[in-house]
Image (cartoon, rainbow, N blue to C red; front, top):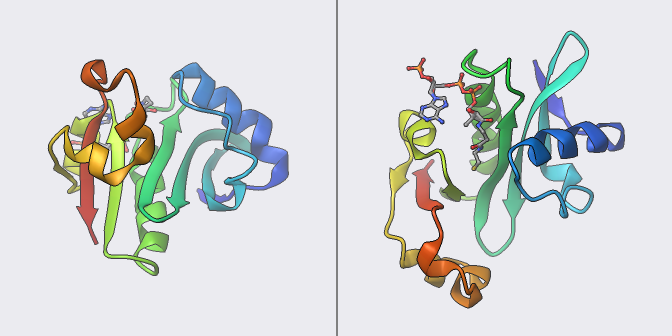
Length: 138
Ligand SMILES: CC(C)(COP(=O)(O)OP(=O)(O)OC[C@H]1O[C@@H](n2cnc3c(N)ncnc32)[C@H](O)[C@@H]1OP(=O)(O)O)[C@@H](O)C(=O)NCCC(=O)NCCS
């Protein structure tokens, strides 16, 4: 089961993201855009739709022990469902491209990241960055 995140979920969301070394700094600011997956009253996964100039699927993660049961897929669907009311293109930067390919996303070129995001254009680790740029047409 998934639902919109509430302030009481912040600590658990940050724990899940930290486990995979994903960014936690913007959780409070973007809380309204987070979905959480709940199993036996425990938060076991999260995902965020970052709505800026570019609409980006971010911060998707499922606790170890709960992976490969379809939870990540359901979270992605929930986020994309909301995105469909706002845009027809959702971008993402990921080190798990295989998961998103199964969901129907397509890979784009590494250099394209610089045109889409200022933080990529300015990043001094761009040449060694392992995040794959992908997009969903929804
Ligand atoms: C990526 C992640 C969110 C997927 O969640 P999940 O609940 O394990 O995924 P699901 O069970 O919904 O998997 C759906 C399908 O994708 C496949 N899949 C899951 N993770 C995958 C991965 N990392 N690479 C390739 N395929 C993957 C599953 O095997 C499944 O395939 P099937 O439909 O043929 O059975 C989860 O593995 C995770 O938290 N990874 C670590 C954090 C991370 O890398 N997040 C992405 C940052 S952008």
